[in-house]
Image 1 (cartoon, one colour):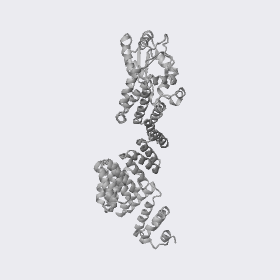
Image 2: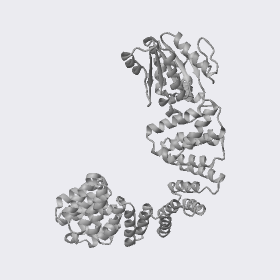
Image 3: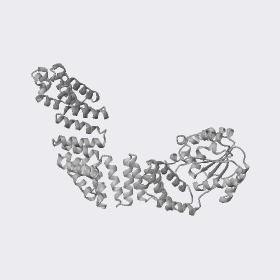
Image 4: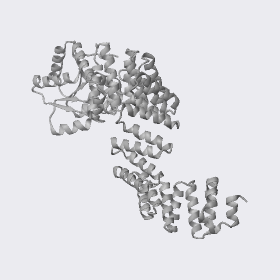
Length: 556
Protein backbone atom coordinates (compact mmCIF):
# COMPACT_ATOMS: atom_id res chain seq x y z
CA UNK A 1 0.00 0.00 0.00
CA UNK A 2 1.39 3.44 -0.89
CA UNK A 3 0.34 6.89 0.21
CA UNK A 4 -1.54 9.06 -2.24
CA UNK A 5 0.19 12.32 -1.32
CA UNK A 6 -2.59 14.66 -2.37
CA UNK A 7 -3.92 17.84 -0.79
CA UNK A 8 -7.70 17.81 -0.74
CA UNK A 9 -7.67 20.67 -3.26
CA UNK A 10 -4.55 20.16 -5.34
CA UNK A 11 -1.85 17.72 -6.28
CA UNK A 12 1.38 17.79 -4.28
CA UNK A 13 4.52 17.42 -6.35
CA UNK A 14 7.75 15.90 -5.04
CA UNK A 15 9.80 19.11 -4.97
CA UNK A 16 10.32 19.88 -1.24
CA UNK A 17 9.87 23.63 -1.61
CA UNK A 18 6.69 23.24 -3.61
CA UNK A 19 5.38 20.82 -0.98
CA UNK A 20 6.18 23.31 1.75
CA UNK A 21 4.38 26.10 -0.10
CA UNK A 22 1.38 23.78 -0.47
CA UNK A 23 1.40 23.37 3.32
CA UNK A 24 1.46 27.14 3.81
CA UNK A 25 -1.45 27.63 1.38
CA UNK A 26 -3.47 24.95 3.13
CA UNK A 27 -2.90 26.54 6.53
CA UNK A 28 -3.81 29.98 5.29
CA UNK A 29 -6.89 28.77 3.43
CA UNK A 30 -8.31 26.22 5.84
CA UNK A 31 -10.42 27.42 8.75
CA UNK A 32 -11.62 25.54 11.82
CA UNK A 33 -11.04 21.81 12.30
CA UNK A 34 -8.60 20.00 10.02
CA UNK A 35 -6.20 17.05 10.09
CA UNK A 36 -2.80 17.25 8.39
CA UNK A 37 0.00 14.71 8.23
CA UNK A 38 3.62 15.56 7.44
CA UNK A 39 6.01 12.61 7.07
CA UNK A 40 9.65 13.58 7.56
CA UNK A 41 12.68 13.22 9.80
CA UNK A 42 12.85 15.08 13.09
CA UNK A 43 15.21 17.77 11.84
CA UNK A 44 12.99 18.54 8.87
CA UNK A 45 9.97 18.64 11.15
CA UNK A 46 11.52 21.37 13.29
CA UNK A 47 12.49 23.31 10.15
CA UNK A 48 8.90 23.20 8.84
CA UNK A 49 7.45 24.33 12.19
CA UNK A 50 9.83 27.30 12.39
CA UNK A 51 9.12 28.34 8.79
CA UNK A 52 5.36 28.09 9.25
CA UNK A 53 5.57 30.35 12.29
CA UNK A 54 7.24 32.98 10.11
CA UNK A 55 5.17 32.48 6.95
CA UNK A 56 1.75 32.26 8.62
CA UNK A 57 2.12 35.04 11.22
CA UNK A 58 -1.60 35.78 11.60
CA UNK A 59 -2.37 32.33 13.03
CA UNK A 60 -1.95 31.33 16.65
CA UNK A 61 0.46 28.37 16.49
CA UNK A 62 1.32 25.98 19.32
CA UNK A 63 3.44 22.81 19.54
CA UNK A 64 2.59 19.73 21.63
CA UNK A 65 5.66 17.52 22.06
CA UNK A 66 5.75 14.04 23.58
CA UNK A 67 8.84 12.15 24.67
CA UNK A 68 7.13 9.17 26.28
CA UNK A 69 4.23 6.88 25.29
CA UNK A 70 0.71 8.24 25.76
CA UNK A 71 -2.66 6.47 25.63
CA UNK A 72 -4.93 9.47 25.07
CA UNK A 73 -4.66 12.85 23.36
CA UNK A 74 -8.07 14.48 23.74
CA UNK A 75 -7.71 15.35 27.42
CA UNK A 76 -4.30 16.92 26.86
CA UNK A 77 -5.59 19.15 24.08
CA UNK A 78 -8.65 20.06 26.14
CA UNK A 79 -6.41 21.30 28.96
CA UNK A 80 -4.23 23.19 26.50
CA UNK A 81 -7.17 25.01 24.87
CA UNK A 82 -8.34 26.24 28.27
CA UNK A 83 -5.02 28.02 28.64
CA UNK A 84 -4.43 29.22 25.07
CA UNK A 85 -6.25 30.19 21.89
CA UNK A 86 -4.99 27.94 19.08
CA UNK A 87 -5.44 27.95 15.29
CA UNK A 88 -2.73 25.48 14.33
CA UNK A 89 -1.41 22.75 16.67
CA UNK A 90 1.70 20.80 15.67
CA UNK A 91 1.86 17.39 17.39
CA UNK A 92 5.24 15.72 17.66
CA UNK A 93 6.37 12.49 19.33
CA UNK A 94 3.41 10.16 18.68
CA UNK A 95 6.06 7.66 17.54
CA UNK A 96 7.02 7.16 21.21
CA UNK A 97 3.62 5.49 21.65
CA UNK A 98 4.17 3.25 18.62
CA UNK A 99 7.78 2.10 18.59
CA UNK A 100 7.18 -0.72 21.12
CA UNK A 101 4.80 -2.32 18.60
CA UNK A 102 7.38 -1.88 15.86
CA UNK A 103 10.07 -3.63 17.91
CA UNK A 104 8.60 -7.04 17.16
CA UNK A 105 9.15 -7.03 13.41
CA UNK A 106 11.22 -4.03 12.26
CA UNK A 107 10.47 -3.41 8.63
CA UNK A 108 8.55 -6.68 8.23
CA UNK A 109 5.07 -5.60 9.33
CA UNK A 110 2.50 -6.32 6.64
CA UNK A 111 -0.98 -4.93 6.22
CA UNK A 112 -2.43 -8.08 7.83
CA UNK A 113 -0.16 -7.68 10.85
CA UNK A 114 -1.21 -4.05 11.26
CA UNK A 115 -4.80 -5.28 11.14
CA UNK A 116 -4.16 -7.72 14.00
CA UNK A 117 -6.34 -6.21 16.72
CA UNK A 118 -4.06 -7.37 19.54
CA UNK A 119 -1.29 -5.14 18.21
CA UNK A 120 -3.30 -1.90 18.11
CA UNK A 121 -1.55 0.86 20.05
CA UNK A 122 -3.92 2.44 22.55
CA UNK A 123 -3.34 5.94 21.25
CA UNK A 124 -4.61 4.91 17.79
CA UNK A 125 -7.71 3.23 19.21
CA UNK A 126 -8.31 6.45 21.09
CA UNK A 127 -7.99 8.61 17.94
CA UNK A 128 -10.32 6.31 15.97
CA UNK A 129 -12.95 6.38 18.68
CA UNK A 130 -12.75 10.08 19.51
CA UNK A 131 -12.48 11.61 16.03
CA UNK A 132 -15.98 13.13 16.12
CA UNK A 133 -15.21 14.80 19.47
CA UNK A 134 -12.01 16.26 17.99
CA UNK A 135 -14.04 17.62 15.05
CA UNK A 136 -16.96 18.96 17.09
CA UNK A 137 -15.09 20.47 20.04
CA UNK A 138 -11.82 21.81 18.62
CA UNK A 139 -11.73 24.40 15.81
CA UNK A 140 -8.06 23.66 15.33
CA UNK A 141 -5.88 22.49 12.47
CA UNK A 142 -4.04 19.48 13.89
CA UNK A 143 -0.69 18.79 12.22
CA UNK A 144 0.88 15.40 13.01
CA UNK A 145 4.59 15.27 12.18
CA UNK A 146 5.52 11.60 11.82
CA UNK A 147 8.45 9.38 10.81
CA UNK A 148 7.64 6.94 7.97
CA UNK A 149 7.02 3.92 10.23
CA UNK A 150 4.50 5.90 12.33
CA UNK A 151 2.72 7.02 9.18
CA UNK A 152 2.10 3.36 8.32
CA UNK A 153 0.45 2.76 11.67
CA UNK A 154 -2.00 5.59 11.02
CA UNK A 155 -2.82 4.15 7.59
CA UNK A 156 -3.48 0.62 8.85
CA UNK A 157 -4.48 0.99 12.48
CA UNK A 158 -6.21 4.41 12.61
CA UNK A 159 -7.89 4.47 9.16
CA UNK A 160 -11.04 6.23 10.37
CA UNK A 161 -9.00 9.06 11.82
CA UNK A 162 -6.44 9.16 9.01
CA UNK A 163 -9.07 9.27 6.26
CA UNK A 164 -10.34 12.59 7.57
CA UNK A 165 -7.04 14.19 6.64
CA UNK A 166 -7.15 17.57 4.95
CA UNK A 167 -3.61 17.20 3.65
CA UNK A 168 -0.75 14.71 3.51
CA UNK A 169 2.84 15.54 2.61
CA UNK A 170 6.06 13.57 2.63
CA UNK A 171 9.62 14.90 2.75
CA UNK A 172 12.07 12.03 2.21
CA UNK A 173 15.72 12.65 3.07
CA UNK A 174 18.08 13.36 0.24
CA UNK A 175 20.15 10.20 -0.58
CA UNK A 176 23.40 11.90 0.42
CA UNK A 177 21.89 12.92 3.76
CA UNK A 178 20.72 9.35 4.41
CA UNK A 179 24.21 8.08 3.57
CA UNK A 180 25.93 10.60 5.82
CA UNK A 181 23.61 10.02 8.77
CA UNK A 182 23.94 6.26 8.35
CA UNK A 183 27.71 6.56 8.28
CA UNK A 184 27.76 8.64 11.46
CA UNK A 185 25.39 6.39 13.43
CA UNK A 186 27.32 3.29 12.40
CA UNK A 187 30.62 4.88 13.39
CA UNK A 188 29.15 5.59 16.83
CA UNK A 189 27.96 1.97 17.21
CA UNK A 190 29.29 0.61 20.50
CA UNK A 191 27.47 -1.98 22.63
CA UNK A 192 29.15 -0.82 25.83
CA UNK A 193 28.03 2.72 25.06
CA UNK A 194 24.48 1.48 24.47
CA UNK A 195 24.53 -0.15 27.92
CA UNK A 196 25.53 3.16 29.51
CA UNK A 197 22.56 5.02 28.00
CA UNK A 198 19.50 5.75 30.08
CA UNK A 199 16.22 4.13 29.08
CA UNK A 200 15.03 7.39 27.52
CA UNK A 201 18.31 7.83 25.63
CA UNK A 202 17.98 4.32 24.21
CA UNK A 203 14.47 5.09 22.99
CA UNK A 204 15.80 8.21 21.28
CA UNK A 205 18.53 6.15 19.64
CA UNK A 206 16.07 3.44 18.55
CA UNK A 207 13.89 6.08 16.89
CA UNK A 208 16.95 7.52 15.20
CA UNK A 209 17.62 4.10 13.64
CA UNK A 210 13.96 3.74 12.71
CA UNK A 211 14.01 7.11 11.02
CA UNK A 212 16.93 6.12 8.82
CA UNK A 213 15.60 2.64 8.06
CA UNK A 214 12.39 4.20 6.84
CA UNK A 215 14.25 6.20 4.19
CA UNK A 216 14.82 5.03 0.61
CA UNK A 217 16.95 4.71 -1.39
CA UNK A 218 19.72 3.43 0.82
CA UNK A 219 22.99 1.60 0.26
CA UNK A 220 22.75 -2.15 0.90
CA UNK A 221 25.76 -2.21 3.25
CA UNK A 222 24.42 0.75 5.21
CA UNK A 223 21.03 -0.88 5.60
CA UNK A 224 22.60 -4.15 6.79
CA UNK A 225 24.77 -2.23 9.25
CA UNK A 226 21.81 -0.27 10.59
CA UNK A 227 19.76 -3.39 11.24
CA UNK A 228 22.75 -5.04 12.95
CA UNK A 229 23.52 -2.05 15.19
CA UNK A 230 19.84 -1.62 15.97
CA UNK A 231 19.80 -5.25 17.13
CA UNK A 232 22.75 -4.54 19.44
CA UNK A 233 20.98 -1.47 20.82
CA UNK A 234 17.82 -3.46 21.44
CA UNK A 235 19.74 -6.18 23.29
CA UNK A 236 21.19 -3.45 25.51
CA UNK A 237 17.59 -2.30 26.10
CA UNK A 238 16.52 -5.93 26.81
CA UNK A 239 14.13 -5.83 23.86
CA UNK A 240 15.21 -9.27 22.72
CA UNK A 241 12.34 -10.08 20.35
CA UNK A 242 12.91 -6.81 18.53
CA UNK A 243 16.64 -7.54 18.39
CA UNK A 244 15.99 -10.94 16.79
CA UNK A 245 13.74 -9.32 14.17
CA UNK A 246 16.41 -6.72 13.43
CA UNK A 247 19.22 -9.29 13.07
CA UNK A 248 16.97 -11.38 10.82
CA UNK A 249 16.41 -8.38 8.59
CA UNK A 250 20.19 -7.95 8.31
CA UNK A 251 20.58 -11.68 7.54
CA UNK A 252 17.81 -11.48 4.93
CA UNK A 253 19.88 -8.89 3.06
CA UNK A 254 23.25 -10.53 3.78
CA UNK A 255 22.84 -14.28 4.53
CA UNK A 256 26.55 -14.84 5.31
CA UNK A 257 26.65 -12.15 8.02
CA UNK A 258 28.15 -14.36 10.73
CA UNK A 259 28.10 -11.65 13.43
CA UNK A 260 24.37 -11.19 12.90
CA UNK A 261 23.78 -14.95 13.27
CA UNK A 262 25.86 -14.93 16.46
CA UNK A 263 24.05 -11.96 17.96
CA UNK A 264 20.68 -13.40 16.96
CA UNK A 265 21.75 -16.38 19.05
CA UNK A 266 22.57 -14.06 21.95
CA UNK A 267 19.08 -12.53 21.87
CA UNK A 268 17.52 -16.01 21.76
CA UNK A 269 19.77 -17.05 24.64
CA UNK A 270 18.56 -14.12 26.76
CA UNK A 271 14.98 -15.21 26.06
CA UNK A 272 15.84 -18.69 27.35
CA UNK A 273 15.47 -20.18 23.85
CA UNK A 274 18.66 -22.22 24.13
CA UNK A 275 17.97 -24.69 21.32
CA UNK A 276 17.23 -21.86 18.89
CA UNK A 277 20.32 -19.99 20.11
CA UNK A 278 22.52 -23.05 19.46
CA UNK A 279 21.16 -23.26 15.91
CA UNK A 280 22.08 -19.60 15.35
CA UNK A 281 25.58 -20.06 16.76
CA UNK A 282 26.09 -23.13 14.57
CA UNK A 283 25.07 -21.12 11.52
CA UNK A 284 27.67 -18.48 12.44
CA UNK A 285 30.27 -21.26 12.86
CA UNK A 286 29.30 -22.80 9.52
CA UNK A 287 30.01 -19.45 7.83
CA UNK A 288 33.16 -18.77 9.88
CA UNK A 289 34.58 -21.94 11.50
CA UNK A 290 37.23 -20.05 13.49
CA UNK A 291 34.68 -17.71 15.11
CA UNK A 292 35.69 -18.33 18.71
CA UNK A 293 32.89 -16.21 20.21
CA UNK A 294 30.22 -18.36 18.55
CA UNK A 295 31.85 -21.54 19.88
CA UNK A 296 31.96 -19.99 23.35
CA UNK A 297 28.33 -18.82 23.18
CA UNK A 298 27.27 -22.27 21.94
CA UNK A 299 28.93 -23.73 25.03
CA UNK A 300 26.99 -21.36 27.30
CA UNK A 301 23.66 -22.41 25.78
CA UNK A 302 24.57 -26.10 26.01
CA UNK A 303 25.62 -25.65 29.63
CA UNK A 304 22.30 -24.01 30.48
CA UNK A 305 20.57 -27.02 28.95
CA UNK A 306 22.61 -29.27 31.25
CA UNK A 307 24.58 -30.67 28.30
CA UNK A 308 27.91 -30.25 30.07
CA UNK A 309 29.95 -32.65 27.91
CA UNK A 310 28.86 -30.84 24.75
CA UNK A 311 29.51 -27.49 26.42
CA UNK A 312 33.05 -28.52 27.38
CA UNK A 313 33.71 -29.53 23.76
CA UNK A 314 32.50 -26.11 22.58
CA UNK A 315 34.64 -24.23 25.13
CA UNK A 316 37.68 -26.30 24.13
CA UNK A 317 37.12 -25.42 20.49
CA UNK A 318 37.01 -21.73 21.43
CA UNK A 319 40.23 -22.14 23.45
CA UNK A 320 41.89 -24.00 20.57
CA UNK A 321 41.17 -21.01 18.30
CA UNK A 322 41.99 -18.42 20.98
CA UNK A 323 44.31 -19.92 23.64
CA UNK A 324 44.12 -16.84 25.89
CA UNK A 325 40.32 -16.90 26.06
CA UNK A 326 40.08 -16.77 29.86
CA UNK A 327 36.27 -16.68 29.89
CA UNK A 328 36.11 -19.96 27.95
CA UNK A 329 38.61 -21.56 30.38
CA UNK A 330 36.53 -20.34 33.30
CA UNK A 331 33.21 -21.58 31.90
CA UNK A 332 34.79 -24.92 30.99
CA UNK A 333 35.69 -25.18 34.68
CA UNK A 334 32.07 -24.47 35.62
CA UNK A 335 30.83 -27.25 33.32
CA UNK A 336 33.42 -29.67 34.71
CA UNK A 337 32.42 -28.74 38.23
CA UNK A 338 28.77 -29.37 37.37
CA UNK A 339 29.83 -32.87 36.30
CA UNK A 340 31.63 -33.37 39.62
CA UNK A 341 35.03 -33.38 37.87
CA UNK A 342 36.60 -31.08 40.43
CA UNK A 343 40.26 -31.81 39.61
CA UNK A 344 39.68 -30.94 35.97
CA UNK A 345 37.66 -27.88 37.01
CA UNK A 346 40.52 -26.66 39.22
CA UNK A 347 42.91 -26.96 36.26
CA UNK A 348 40.52 -24.90 34.09
CA UNK A 349 40.12 -22.20 36.74
CA UNK A 350 43.88 -22.03 37.17
CA UNK A 351 44.29 -21.57 33.43
CA UNK A 352 41.80 -18.70 33.53
CA UNK A 353 43.68 -17.16 36.48
CA UNK A 354 46.99 -17.57 34.68
CA UNK A 355 45.61 -15.58 31.73
CA UNK A 356 43.71 -13.07 33.89
CA UNK A 357 45.15 -12.97 37.43
CA UNK A 358 42.49 -10.56 38.69
CA UNK A 359 39.56 -12.82 37.78
CA UNK A 360 37.92 -13.10 41.19
CA UNK A 361 35.20 -15.50 39.96
CA UNK A 362 37.82 -18.05 38.90
CA UNK A 363 39.57 -17.83 42.27
CA UNK A 364 36.25 -18.19 44.06
CA UNK A 365 35.07 -21.17 42.02
CA UNK A 366 38.45 -22.84 42.34
CA UNK A 367 37.90 -22.54 46.10
CA UNK A 368 34.48 -24.19 45.73
CA UNK A 369 35.98 -27.12 43.80
CA UNK A 370 38.69 -27.53 46.44
CA UNK A 371 36.04 -27.34 49.16
CA UNK A 372 34.03 -30.13 47.51
CA UNK A 373 37.22 -32.23 47.50
CA UNK A 374 37.64 -31.64 51.24
CA UNK A 375 40.79 -29.55 50.65
CA UNK A 376 39.72 -26.85 53.09
CA UNK A 377 43.10 -25.15 53.53
CA UNK A 378 43.51 -24.80 49.77
CA UNK A 379 39.90 -23.59 49.49
CA UNK A 380 40.52 -20.92 52.13
CA UNK A 381 43.56 -19.70 50.17
CA UNK A 382 41.45 -19.46 47.00
CA UNK A 383 38.65 -17.58 48.75
CA UNK A 384 41.21 -15.19 50.23
CA UNK A 385 42.62 -14.56 46.76
CA UNK A 386 39.11 -13.74 45.50
CA UNK A 387 38.62 -11.41 48.49
CA UNK A 388 41.95 -9.73 47.83
CA UNK A 389 40.75 -8.91 44.30
CA UNK A 390 37.19 -8.05 45.35
CA UNK A 391 36.99 -7.23 49.09
CA UNK A 392 33.18 -6.96 49.08
CA UNK A 393 32.64 -10.45 47.63
CA UNK A 394 30.24 -11.59 50.36
CA UNK A 395 29.92 -15.18 49.10
CA UNK A 396 33.71 -15.64 49.28
CA UNK A 397 33.71 -14.50 52.94
CA UNK A 398 30.80 -16.86 53.62
CA UNK A 399 32.43 -19.89 52.02
CA UNK A 400 35.72 -19.06 53.72
CA UNK A 401 33.77 -19.31 56.95
CA UNK A 402 32.35 -22.70 55.93
CA UNK A 403 35.82 -24.08 55.21
CA UNK A 404 37.11 -22.76 58.54
CA UNK A 405 34.10 -24.30 60.29
CA UNK A 406 34.88 -27.75 58.87
CA UNK A 407 38.45 -27.36 60.12
CA UNK A 408 37.04 -26.71 63.61
CA UNK A 409 38.24 -23.10 63.55
CA UNK A 410 34.98 -21.72 64.91
CA UNK A 411 36.22 -18.29 65.99
CA UNK A 412 37.75 -17.68 62.58
CA UNK A 413 34.56 -18.96 60.92
CA UNK A 414 32.45 -16.53 62.96
CA UNK A 415 34.68 -13.65 61.88
CA UNK A 416 34.24 -14.65 58.23
CA UNK A 417 30.47 -14.95 58.56
CA UNK A 418 30.34 -11.55 60.24
CA UNK A 419 32.26 -10.02 57.36
CA UNK A 420 29.77 -11.52 54.89
CA UNK A 421 26.91 -10.10 56.99
CA UNK A 422 28.58 -6.70 57.15
CA UNK A 423 28.59 -6.62 53.35
CA UNK A 424 25.13 -8.17 52.99
CA UNK A 425 23.09 -7.68 56.17
CA UNK A 426 20.22 -9.95 55.01
CA UNK A 427 22.51 -12.92 54.25
CA UNK A 428 20.37 -15.49 56.07
CA UNK A 429 22.72 -18.43 55.40
CA UNK A 430 25.60 -16.52 56.98
CA UNK A 431 23.49 -15.73 60.05
CA UNK A 432 22.50 -19.40 60.36
CA UNK A 433 26.05 -20.71 60.02
CA UNK A 434 27.32 -18.08 62.45
CA UNK A 435 24.81 -19.57 64.88
CA UNK A 436 26.15 -23.07 64.21
CA UNK A 437 29.71 -21.99 64.99
CA UNK A 438 28.59 -20.19 68.17
CA UNK A 439 26.60 -23.26 69.21
CA UNK A 440 29.64 -25.50 68.73
CA UNK A 441 31.53 -23.12 71.03
CA UNK A 442 28.79 -23.53 73.65
CA UNK A 443 27.61 -19.94 73.16
CA UNK A 444 23.96 -20.94 72.92
CA UNK A 445 22.40 -17.55 73.68
CA UNK A 446 24.48 -15.91 70.97
CA UNK A 447 23.62 -18.78 68.62
CA UNK A 448 19.88 -18.30 69.20
CA UNK A 449 20.26 -14.58 68.43
CA UNK A 450 21.97 -15.51 65.13
CA UNK A 451 19.23 -18.02 64.23
CA UNK A 452 16.61 -15.38 65.04
CA UNK A 453 18.31 -13.05 62.56
CA UNK A 454 18.32 -15.74 59.87
CA UNK A 455 14.60 -16.32 60.49
CA UNK A 456 13.90 -12.58 60.41
CA UNK A 457 15.23 -12.41 56.85
CA UNK A 458 13.83 -15.81 55.80
CA UNK A 459 10.83 -16.80 57.94
CA UNK A 460 10.44 -20.17 56.15
CA UNK A 461 14.05 -21.18 56.83
CA UNK A 462 13.30 -24.56 58.43
CA UNK A 463 16.98 -25.39 59.07
CA UNK A 464 17.36 -22.25 61.18
CA UNK A 465 14.24 -23.14 63.20
CA UNK A 466 15.65 -26.63 63.79
CA UNK A 467 19.07 -25.28 64.79
CA UNK A 468 17.40 -22.77 67.10
CA UNK A 469 15.62 -25.69 68.78
CA UNK A 470 18.92 -27.54 69.29
CA UNK A 471 20.48 -24.52 71.01
CA UNK A 472 17.40 -24.05 73.22
CA UNK A 473 17.49 -27.74 74.11
CA UNK A 474 21.15 -27.44 75.07
CA UNK A 475 20.05 -24.65 77.43
CA UNK A 476 17.40 -27.08 78.78
CA UNK A 477 14.66 -24.77 77.52
CA UNK A 478 12.67 -27.71 76.24
CA UNK A 479 9.32 -26.03 75.81
CA UNK A 480 10.90 -23.32 73.62
CA UNK A 481 12.92 -25.95 71.73
CA UNK A 482 9.79 -28.00 70.93
CA UNK A 483 8.09 -24.84 69.63
CA UNK A 484 11.05 -24.26 67.31
CA UNK A 485 10.98 -27.84 66.06
CA UNK A 486 7.23 -27.57 65.49
CA UNK A 487 7.83 -24.49 63.37
CA UNK A 488 10.44 -26.34 61.30
CA UNK A 489 7.98 -29.21 60.79
CA UNK A 490 5.16 -26.81 59.86
CA UNK A 491 7.39 -25.41 57.11
CA UNK A 492 8.81 -28.78 56.04
CA UNK A 493 6.71 -31.73 57.28
CA UNK A 494 9.27 -34.26 55.99
CA UNK A 495 12.14 -32.75 57.99
CA UNK A 496 13.20 -35.95 59.77
CA UNK A 497 15.82 -34.10 61.84
CA UNK A 498 13.20 -31.85 63.42
CA UNK A 499 11.03 -34.86 64.30
CA UNK A 500 14.06 -36.70 65.71
CA UNK A 501 15.28 -33.70 67.73
CA UNK A 502 11.78 -33.17 69.05
CA UNK A 503 11.74 -36.81 70.18
CA UNK A 504 15.06 -36.25 71.99
CA UNK A 505 13.60 -33.20 73.69
CA UNK A 506 10.64 -35.16 75.03
CA UNK A 507 12.96 -38.02 76.13
CA UNK A 508 15.02 -35.56 78.17
CA UNK A 509 11.79 -34.57 79.94
CA UNK A 510 10.94 -38.27 80.58
CA UNK A 511 7.87 -37.90 78.37
CA UNK A 512 7.98 -41.42 77.01
CA UNK A 513 4.78 -41.33 74.95
CA UNK A 514 5.63 -38.15 73.03
CA UNK A 515 9.25 -39.24 72.58
CA UNK A 516 8.19 -42.52 70.98
CA UNK A 517 5.54 -40.88 68.78
CA UNK A 518 7.98 -38.30 67.37
CA UNK A 519 10.73 -40.89 66.95
CA UNK A 520 8.25 -43.00 64.99
CA UNK A 521 7.61 -40.06 62.64
CA UNK A 522 11.36 -39.46 62.19
CA UNK A 523 12.03 -43.14 61.37
CA UNK A 524 9.17 -43.20 58.86
CA UNK A 525 10.90 -40.35 56.98
CA UNK A 526 14.51 -41.61 57.22
CA UNK A 527 14.64 -45.15 58.65
CA UNK A 528 18.34 -45.89 58.35
CA UNK A 529 19.72 -42.61 59.70
CA UNK A 530 17.26 -42.24 62.57
CA UNK A 531 17.57 -45.86 63.71
CA UNK A 532 21.38 -45.70 63.68
CA UNK A 533 21.40 -42.43 65.65
CA UNK A 534 18.85 -43.64 68.19
CA UNK A 535 20.93 -46.76 69.00
CA UNK A 536 23.71 -44.67 70.53
CA UNK A 537 22.00 -41.38 71.44
CA UNK A 538 22.23 -40.87 75.23
CA UNK A 539 18.98 -38.87 75.15
CA UNK A 540 17.13 -42.17 74.86
CA UNK A 541 18.92 -43.93 77.76
CA UNK A 542 15.89 -43.80 80.02
CA UNK A 543 13.56 -45.46 77.50
CA UNK A 544 16.03 -47.80 75.86
CA UNK A 545 14.57 -50.90 77.53
CA UNK A 546 10.99 -50.08 76.53
CA UNK A 547 9.67 -52.75 74.18
CA UNK A 548 8.09 -50.12 71.92
CA UNK A 549 11.45 -48.42 71.57
CA UNK A 550 13.14 -51.73 70.72
CA UNK A 551 10.49 -52.45 68.12
CA UNK A 552 11.00 -49.04 66.49
CA UNK A 553 14.78 -49.38 66.43
CA UNK A 554 15.37 -53.06 65.83
CA UNK A 555 12.05 -54.07 64.31
CA UNK A 556 11.58 -56.88 66.87
